[in-house]
Length: 356
Image (tube, rainbow, N blue to C red; front, side, top):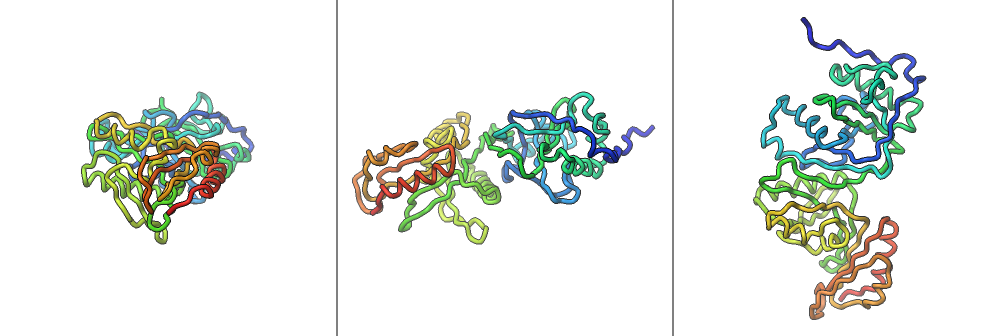
């Protein structure tokens, strides 16, 4: 007796005239990925179930809950009911949050498959056919309302998975948190990238988060390798130059770092608190940015405190040090909900801060 499912039918000839079962999803999504990979990744490999067969749009795969994210990755990668420690160590779980609700074609709810002429073989049989269904959904006349597909996870049909299309109109997706699937030997988390500007070889100001998925993926990969090689515990900072699209290490600091001072106001958990948590063996805090931040050093002389504090959203830090040329005497941090507001206030602050 042949237990293999037969081929799933192609999209019906009247598919584009059918009304798609669209559901709104306004909560978090969860994605399992390699520590060295970007949390937000829209793949174009053409190997996964709902990839574009023509490779013209990318697809991000996630799940509606951590359990679905776990089984979709580890069930597929290992093909076993048990998962080795090595597999767990390589991967982490990221919680993603769309800033506005997603509109998904519902292939998970009862009766939804039949409405579009599909059945459960779409999730277990030929991936080539599933990819053609993906393109048919992407090109449907309702495409402006469709951000992706909601479907049953292959390795546990009670869990819902999501395939998001990289297309115009997709809501911005924020990264809420990333945690390791394996933590007895130490959780590992990264703060958002910061772009640094120097004056006379000393850090003048930092702006964060600096959004560049490629550079962030490379930076995470280098950082994780160094920390594992050194068996390091605590905050580790690596400062890179960007040279022709590559990252070139300039400085490594096995401690909290001046370029991370923006995290005091700018992140859910500051670099100082997470350093203490790490060395005390406590769970690490959330490294998510709370908005758009800028940190400016006071070099050589202190600025007018009252003038700076008159700027909305600015925090003032005085280290109480004796002034001398080039010495870091304090800093201020600007935190605003929008990058444009942050940049405007940064410009105002720099006019009030002289460095010697």
